[in-house]
Length: 201
Image (cartoon, rainbow, N blue to C red; front, side, top):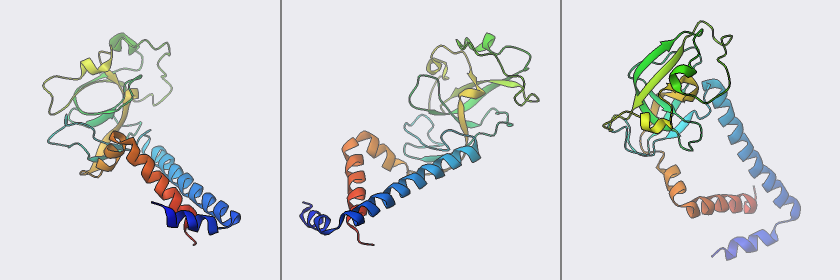
């Protein structure tokens, strides 16, 4: 299947192959740096996410690519579409804020969340901003998300990955396909790596 490519690979010298490997590694490193840079600018661990379910239809559909920001100085409002992640859960969830409660910094928010965290609130951080308790729900769901909170009664701002600022429809289906069919992902990465090795320029 790759006979010609393998012959071309054998004809290449060691130095050329090493150079191509370094070029390929630099492309990967540049991509990671851009991703980290976006995370810093947007204050979000995942500034771009893919919708994986139909729980937010008709606002967003499976495969839509969402762009997020998470300004530390911004309070969330009812109606905001957020992406949140509960500790221990692997996949972030895209749902709409249905209810918010501002809690003064002087009050231990753990009284309301049933959080098992031993860490105390940090009043020195953004002290002009109150803590917030949030309740979310998918537009296409009949009930709110309390069952998804894994024992918590409310979400806190620390659970929010970001607020949706824009989207591209269906672009994320490539990511979904690679997650559903890991062989496709490995084949794509292997093909790109092989092309990077055998190209002459």
